[in-house]
Amino acid sequence: MSMRMLALAFLVACGGSEPAPPPAPAPAKAAKKEAPKPKPKPKPAEAVVVKPDADGVAHVEASDMMKYNTGRIEVEGTTFKIELKHVGSMAKTAMGHNLVVLQAGTDPVAWAGTAVTAAGNDYIPEDASAIIAHTKLIGGGESDTIEVVLPGPGEYPFVCSFPGHAAIMQGVIVAK
Ligand SMILES: [Cu+2]
Image 1 (cartoon, helix red, strand yellow):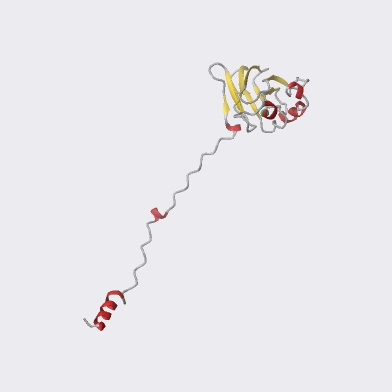
Image 2: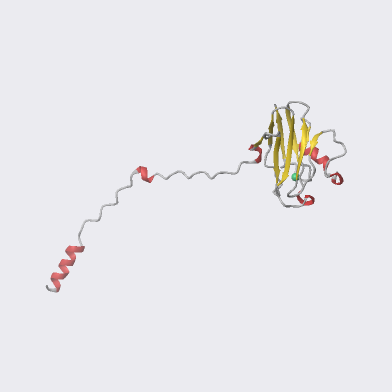
């Protein structure tokens, strides 16, 4: 084979062909992106409902994150118990928590404002007229259980009276 023949053969083999057709469009179904699955969000505490267990005890947790695990306690009747458990590890002087049940209609944040001066009494003010029941002030790893006797069915605010906690650490007891 001469050089000329080789060159021709090369041209025939590789040159002058039609441009390749564009790739066929993928079927619409395959092209459609699957919607990303929404990530499970932690429920805000307000959305978590706590009810008394078989022994009539409503279990509430408080943490080093300055939060209760619930913003709503639902009870049947007007007598029940609340166990407050501090699931954190911080000392009560730094991240103390209590749970104070207040008379219906009491503004928990405004009331807690009157409690900040009562450091000597674990933030339970001398004027206890708005208080229905309250736990001790506790630190990490501690718990306290109290009996609550409500004056009747209705909605009663509860709050932590440790300074600065009331705006976040509050909720409502709904008694039917
Ligand atoms: Cu607190």
